[in-house]
Every structure is written in structure tokens, then in C-alpha cells.
Image (cartoon, rainbow, N blue to C red; front, top):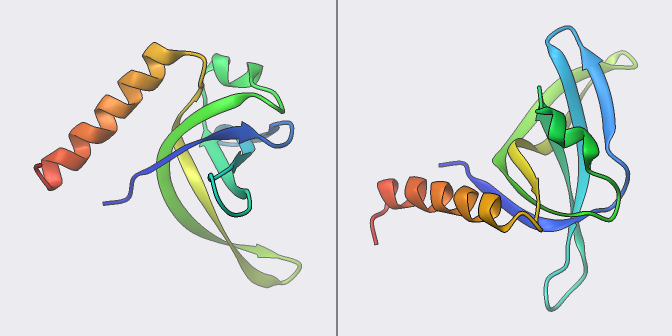
Length: 115
């Protein structure tokens, strides 16, 4: 099972790229554990809804998605990038949407390993 849930802050402004298959928004989400250093994870959201364009640096967000490693050619060599591919990115202030996302994730986990 490949499920990722991040709650953190957008550490830089989102980047929007247009591709032949649609837009991709890239985020950097920084999480801050109670102990230890902050951790930043790259997030890519393919064909996001219009609400995704309103998020900005400093916004608290909840991300649900999957980890993916992709390979690409750049400068004549093969490179790779590991990132979270988002299914949902929502402002953490939207408590009802965050709760719905968590319920879906818990449902998926419970289907595999009932409690």
C-alpha cells in the first residue's frame, strides 16, 4: 500500500507547468516534528482543480497522495526524482475537507489491515 499524508506549510510559492496532458502544480511542503529538524517534501499535483491555484507560500496544507519515483532525461543523462503525487491538497483551515480526507485514508488502511 502506498499512501502518504502530509500536514505542513508551503515553504515556497507553487510552480505551475503546462504539459500536453494538462497543468501540473509543484509544491514544497515542510513538516516540523516536535523534535528534530524540519523536513521538506516535493509534491506534484497533476490536473489540479481551480482551488489549487489559490494556495500560496506560508499556507498550512494537508496533502494526501502516493510516493513516486520518476525517471527523465536531462542534459544527456538519465535522472530521477522522488516526490509525493497528490490526490488532494487542501488548506488545513478547511477542517471538514481535511476530516473527509482522513476518513478516506483510514478506510483504505482498515480495508487492508482491519483494527
